[in-house]
Amino acid sequence: MLLAAVRLLDGRSHPDRAMQPVAAPPQPQLMPIPDEQTSLVEGDTWSLLNSTPGAVEAAGGRPFPWVVTLASVLIFTIVVDIIGNLLVVISVLRNRKLRKAGNAFVVSLALADLLVAVYPYPLVLSAIFNDGWVAGYLQCQISGFLMGLSVIGSIFNITGIAVNRYCYICHRLRYDAVYSGGNTVCYVLLVWALTVLAIAPNWFVESLRYDPRVYSCTFAQSVSPLYTVAVVLVHFVLPIAVVSYCYLRIWILVLRARRRVKTDARPKVKPHDVRGFLTMFVVFVLFAVCWAPINLIGLAVALDPRLGPAVPEWLFVASYFMAYFNSCLNAVVYGALNSNFRKEYKRIVLIIFKFHC
Image (cartoon, rainbow, N blue to C red; front, side, top):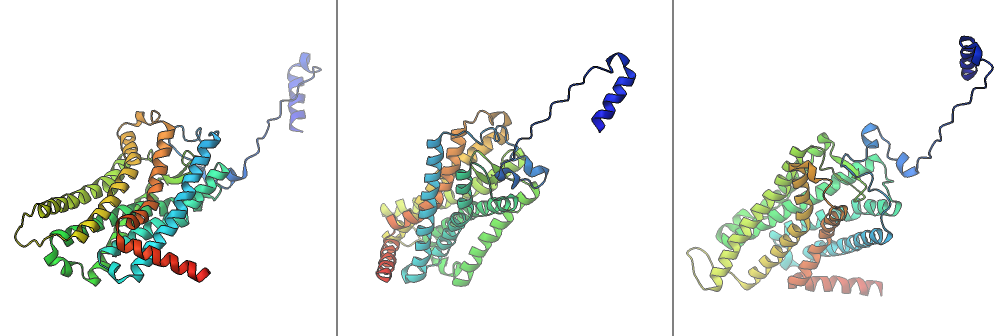
């Protein structure tokens, strides 16, 4: 009716064109919205998947071998993460030789690694298979929060392990008083309290967003350059510096002990103490190697946003999945370098096989 009225008015104002047929305007073609996109629409902020330049364009059209590789790496990570870290927790609970104050942080670290394997990683795997996030806005926020909780909890627990090893080897006379049973529990709780405090600002900055390049709801580095720099410094650089200091002092003492240089009030370092230290040192090195690329990329882009488009997508994605892969490595390191863990792994596996047979 509205179209007819417009034609009538047009004919009155222009008599010479009144009898000319008026072509109907073309009807707009409505594009169907995929289900995975409709499930994501939770306000205007969510409709913009990520503020990172080029992120939306990179969402689809990846080569099939590349997608299969990412899925395979993540599946392997999930399986080894769950099995390995469950073995770590059960081993410490079963074996008296492993029930030491320092291993409280090892169990805490294993729980941090398990956290991502049972919830965020499966959602990332689902996004890979569906070529997009299908779990909705709330699941995205929870997934990103737990992933951040896990990684920050991991580096803080690794810092706690380093401080514990430093006190045990370099200040053994005061170790038992400092790391009593009650104190150790308080230290572990403090680690997780600091972890929650460190991840909380993400809720206010609204930095947890879905990035289609890595199929993950994660910290968007482009939200605030200043905040990104602060995150890298507090969550990565500062803990790495503390751990490096502790292990450097231990290395100096170990080298002195091997050269038979005796110092006052410092007992000789025992071989099993050195092996335990080396195990935790390898855990630290692997974490630093796996997480350094993504932190360095984030820091570089924050300092100079023009570098963002220059970062190759394959490098960005590979750095993320290398960081994800780290969560399954610690349990393997314990079994490879620590005889007590290795023996307990074997006992648990044998018990499981006997029970099923």
